[in-house]
Figure 1: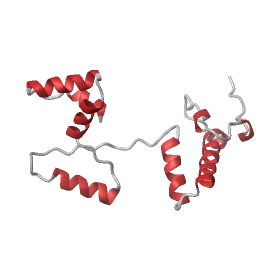
Figure 2 (figure 1 turned 90 degrees about the vertical axis):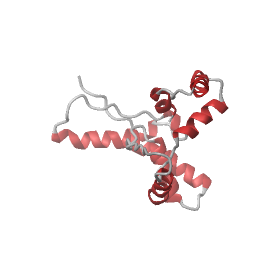
Figure 3 (figure 1 turned 30 degrees about the vertical axis):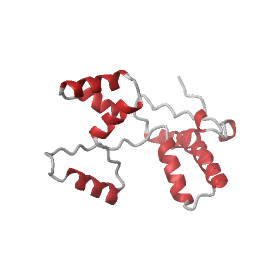
Length: 153
């Protein structure tokens, strides 16, 4: 079967990010002659509408750093975001974990989460099953199951 022609950008919603749909990934590697058509279809169905919404937001909000604002918008709204690696820092008390993480956050703008802070926040902010399980583990002096910690992080 043949794919339908790509939508014109005029047929796509112009004011809402919620209506954007990612282009379906091809089931097999395209032939070299099809690459241009696939790129055009991707740009038409994903990039152009996303840029339109982002640029409209920049125009209405007039941020002090419009390029940075648009970059943040595109990164946070892209339907196929780049998967970023997650690093875990382990060590005994006083080994410098906090200092290392503060430096990584400062120099590379990485996000830094402490498992203990995340667990305490879950207990304080909700009566969820996880919050109750964390409280029970703490009261019994047991470790919180790894799955719960990873899910919350």
